[in-house]
Image 1 (cartoon, rainbow, N blue to C red):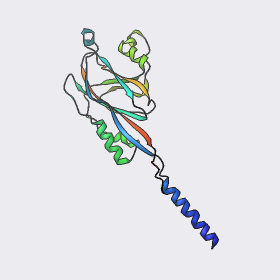
Image 2: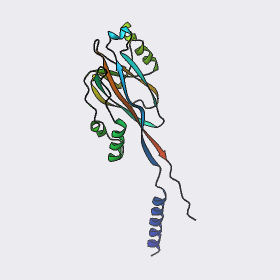
Image 3: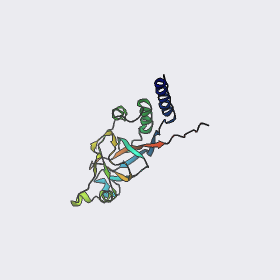
Image 4: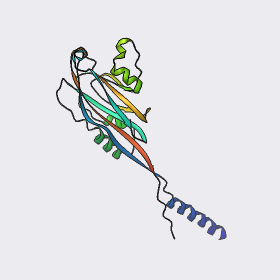
Length: 202
């Protein structure tokens, strides 16, 4: 019976241990880095006459970013904005699936685009080259494959290779003649650890 008492005591101690240490909680948040924005870009030829066919968005990734997304769609010329609702959709999907899953990407809806756009993920050096159109002078512009799309009318792009610091999205209208409006939104997913508050029992 001594042995049984001993086993019961150990079981009780183990159970108490489980009760006290819920461990740190992971808090996942969606943070809008760039609100739904409409960017008008001229065709490459017209850009020589005062318009511009490319522009850059600066992205400061918040601390504890685990991944980030941008979604975009295109409209012809200056024909208005489209609501992308990327942050809203991401928050809803994450609440449903309790965290990040690869299925999230295919569940996000994007309005259908009508004209092609190129979007490059650049560091500061290559951003400067991109804006100066140095690729026309035979300069090589390096960009991150994971965050880059070319000749695409609409897309949702997920980046989890580069999750800290400042990066740039280079937006380009690949058409020589036609202008385009790119509607874009950028959202980061952050994960921070909340340490449990240990309540001392008297």
